[in-house]
Image (tube, rainbow, N blue to C red):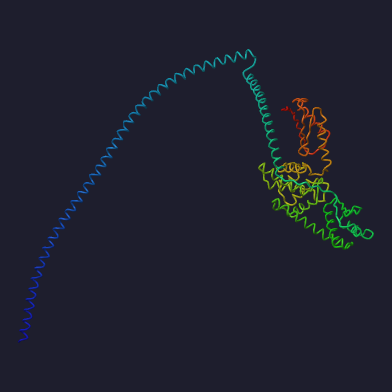
Length: 509
């Protein structure tokens, strides 16, 4: 029972508690609703205010855009009005010009009509004049025209020939001046060396006792040496010297070196002589090749055939009129390179052709051929280019020149061979030639002094002003030149300069 009462009490307490809780919750809910209504009212007012502000801003922005567009429209309307005014003005001007053009056309039409009338009248008058002229001269118009054309042709030909002669004279003067400048500059830029060779070589010995050993018993040693080397060995009374004679410089050099080794070794007999000569020949061959290689390297020439290199080296032991052939070829090569550069041509080709131009003098075979033709054949054989071969073959005019290299080689060859001291000319003969030049000019009356300068290439003659006048100086120069040509032998040419000297002398006391 007590338990039931307790449970009922609990139920009543729980119900009372729930009732009270529900009432409190209802009260809070009403309060929350009231607060929510207030907050909603505040938010509503705030949103309305913000909407009003945004509306005002949009309205202001729209008004600004409208005002800007209105200003632009007004500006465009103003520009259109100005264009309309300008177009109206131009239209008025065009109308005026159109009127003027119509007037001008009308005037031109009148003038054309007038000119047509004048042309018709002129043609009539021209026909009348031609008929009168034909009647007077007895020639038709076509015949008169032909005669006039012929006379004009003759006059034009005469004028053209005169003009051509003037141009040719001017070209000759310019060409001679330019050619002299190039040749002189080429000579001045190349250092030359004077080299004269003879047909004998002198071998010096320490004492005359060695001469007997060289001769050997009954001359067997000297005969063996001469047979092995192909030279003549002269042992005479000349103190401490033996003369080796032979036309071939290579053989003379082999004999000289063989004698040097035999004398240094002391063993001189036929077997030893043959052994030494054989070794020396091989040594000379090696030296020839080395000389050729060194020469082409010094000159900067590449791709030369080995046999041509050997021929170039062999030039060292060849001479032409006493001038060493290798030195002459090197000098010609350098001159050709300088001259080709001055003329705007290829200096390497010119140097190559200059070095090879005398290779025909080296071989001993085919002696009946000119050395230029033989050199050209050798160059062709060893695959040199056609212009190089032509330059080699044409430097003495044996074949026709086909390139500009050929005259350059010819000129430089002459320059190298004609300079004083290059070819054999003993000092006494050289000095005698200079004295003969001076004495020849001194033999003329009125000549005061003469000077042979530039190694005999120029003769300056000084005459007295009281003895010869200006006209006679030109005559004297021509007479001296003709006399030198007829009475003297000389390389190149000799320039005769006659100077008429006037002196005024007074003394201060």
